[in-house]
Amino acid sequence: MSKKINDFGIEQSLKNLGITKENKGVSSGGKYFANGDLLESYSPTDGKLIAKIKTANAKDYDTVIEKSKKAFKEFRMIPAPKRGELVRQFGNKLREKKDDLGKLVSYEMGKSLQEGLGEVQEMIDICDFAVGVSRQLHGYTMHSERPGHRMYEQYHPLGIVGIISAFNFPVAVWSWNTALAWICGNVTIWKPSEKAPLCAIACQNIINEVLKENNLNEGISTMIVGDHKIGDKMVNDKNVALISFTGSTKVGRLVGTNVAQRFGKSILELGGNNAIIISEKADLNMSIIGAVFGAVGTAGQRCTSTRRLIIHESVYNEVKNRLVKAYGQLKIGNPLDEKNHVGPLIDKDAVNQYLDSIKKCKKEGGKFIVEGGVLTGKNFESGCYVKPCIAEVKNSYEIVQHETFAPILYIMKYKNLEDAIEMQNDVPQGLSSAIMTQDLREAELFLSQAGSDCGIANVNIGTSGAEIGGAFGGEKETGGGRESGSDVWKYYMRRQTNTINYLDSLPLAQGIKFDL
Image 1 (tube, rainbow, N blue to C red):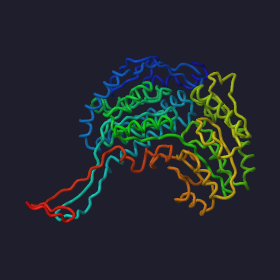
Image 2: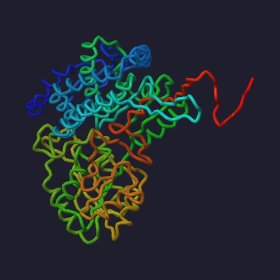
Image 3: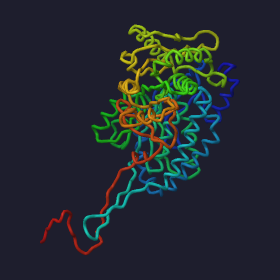
Image 4: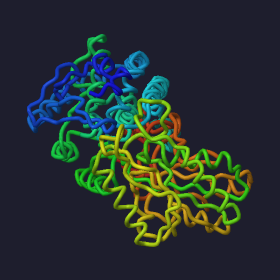
């Protein structure tokens, strides 16, 4: 480990989180075991090996499933507020470990330290939210058409919830799902991204402490580091009632199909191709800040990253010139150094996809006003650091319709707002969207049924403005699922309608007579 990286205290943070040089990648909530292949986790920050992980094989998976099935029968009988207390304690543990875990997220994944800490704060926030929800798992009471009858509905736990998460949010997405799944009475199995397994082990270590302190059995919170074969087993396993999958549209389509074929439930959080409309009536200072952060934060590797700017023709040149100036001020480098704005891409495969997209854009006619490229030399030895770039394009370009997980921003003109909204909606994805305007009519049109077709639609903030409390997710090829806030706890439960007859006779519905 380079001295420069070590200066940020990453080695001590690894120790504090229970990460050793060699780790077992399967946990049933206390014990660790693994009998699969060896996985090595390298940091995109400096290209150095962080640690090794022994992965799961099929037998390990079966062991976890059996422990989870047994645990569910007991866990579902614990009152929901008591399950909420478990989540509250977990949130407090996260507060204690926030600095260490945020640092690990930054080092293993490559996002800035501020964003790494922010991701852990999201975990804390969802715990707080879930604690409140644990006392509000409400159903409805309804009037029956039959005399002497009462109808109501209630919600019951599903069983085992499987979570397959992506590298770009290696801890937050898991917590969004688990915090709500647990308070609903479910047990969880987590298959983290193979590109950020140490973050998962660290999280599992933290929840293991809570489970031990509460004398709870193994199987409530389990983790299994493995390859796509393990993921396939989980997706096709009838024992797993719900699959929450975060990843590409290509893989998500397969996940959704396979889960549906066995009549399981799924939450799909897939691709985003998010746009900001910048009106001639926008506050341009706000617009530039929102656009730049949305495009280059996490090196463009958020599902909510800003990919497209649709700019009114009257302010197009001014916005373009200010963007070029802003990009010239970006500092790229070690994400643990808070002076830097942009860290590395996750790996060299991501770099190659970035380069391919630039090449395709130019071939289709895109004009780059800020050129891209890979950074080399001192402090860029990992080969994962790239230049955020901007291209003038047409929305119809094939590459613009495609989501590239990299800091490539496409800009284009519009004449009237209806055309801009049509351009924004004219992509296969439908996650996040935004308009920058000080005109109330424009804002309301954008938010209306004739406006954005995305799951998230913002006014005067960027596309990455999701927060705990609101339901997170999108439409079309984004998958249609929802996580995090609002009433999405219902996704993790099964609904049951109950009718109670308190008479000494049996009146039938719809006035039907059936006399014996």
